[in-house]
Amino acid sequence: METILIVDDEKNYLVVLEALLGAEGYEIVTARDAKMAVSIIREADLDLVITDMKMPGMSGMELLETCKKIKPEIPVIMMTAFGTIEMAVEAMKKHAYDYIQKPFENEKLKLTVKKAMENHRLVKENRLLVEALSDRFRYGNMVGKSKPMAKVYDLIDKVSGSKASVLITGPSGTGKELIAKAIHYQGPRKKRPLISINCGALTETLLASELFGHEKGAFTGAVAMKKGRFELADGGTIFLDEVGEMPPALQVKLLRVLQEMELERVGGTRTIKVDVRVLSASNRNIKEDVAKGIFREDLYYRLNVIHIDAPSLQERTDDIPLLVKHFIEKFQDGDSKKKIELRPEVWKALYAHPWPGNVRELENVIERAMVLYTGGVITLDDLPKTLVDTETQFDVERFVPSHIPLPKAMEEIEERLVRRALAQSKNVQTHAAKNLGITKSLIQHKMKKYNITL
Image 1: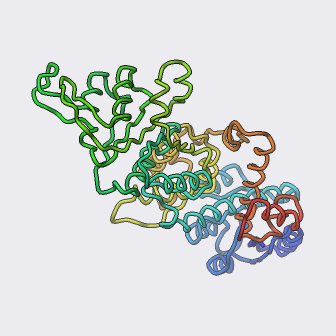
Image 2 (image 1 turned 45 degrees about the vertical axis):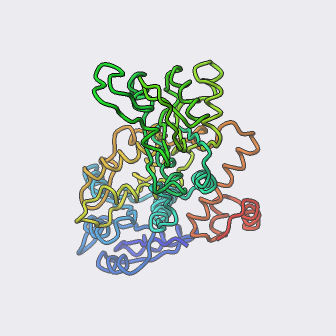
Image 3 (image 1 turned 90 degrees about the vertical axis):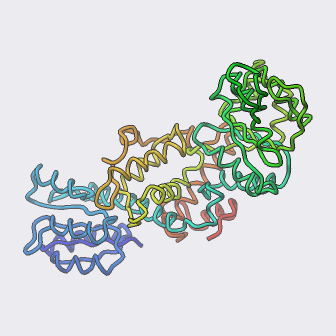
């Protein structure tokens, strides 16, 4: 049960608010002055504070400031019968959740309290997830425990021990290179080199030289023999990033290497044998490029013996708290590892943003916030304007996987809602069912259906 502390020197308001909000299912604690309230805030596990602005001794504004120092995550709603615009602005600057004038409308107050509670549930949920971050949620340098990432980890486990070629696809910023590294360093070739090359960053001539090497005098500027990446990766692994950008002429040469495991350097005639595992990645739809004649079909099948799809951040929003924690630790000064909080509105913005740049974009956002934040708290002011302006609305592209039948899509949504409701209610099934508007027996049925255990 969520607990609300109500602070007011007028007994009648305490009685009215206790009856009004108690009927909504909240546990109510009251205090007649701010001094008593401070003691309760220190000792009790509160979810919300509602305080009068004008009280003898310590004022409501002073209580707000004290509360934010003791427990900054607790939302505070201010009330006053002597309100002015200036007072409201000052309260919001001091991070009050909202400001209500007396006499208040019951329904408006209940709605404000409900919204404040939803914010606080979100903060608590994310804190639990952040605190749960441990090595078992890390896979190499990857961070995440969502279902899409669990599938990736499972594939890595299965393919790392083989020599089969792996094609990793997914949008930019999803960590395709991290997946390649995990496959290499978990496999039998981990003590041998992992050599990477970006096939889209070089001209055709330079790419040929980098991949296959060149002999002295092969072209202007080739003043000495140079081994290519395949030779350097002998006994280990080569990672061909953005392989979909490779020019057609080089696709033919690459195909031969994959088929025969042998090559000639540019300008050379000697055949060189290599033993290399090939991992490749692309943010293009190579299958479509094959249909268009842009990419060789035989090469595609050589590269795509095993396919791993790196999920976008939209598909793994459950991992946002873990990723945020990871990046905060990464960008904190080595000498200063103090706890850093994110305001509820910041969490809402992070969840609402579509993340076109995926995990890389989130990393940049957190790095920026770590430079700008003050006082151990990250606020909306520390986020880029593109995040602050994101509209909070249901985004089908974000929540529903593409290319699946409607019944399956509905099940995906239903499972996410059930899991979220349980997390928000601390796994109390009765509360979770109430939040979802269903019965306890029905939520138990859904838990069994989706194999959800507490």
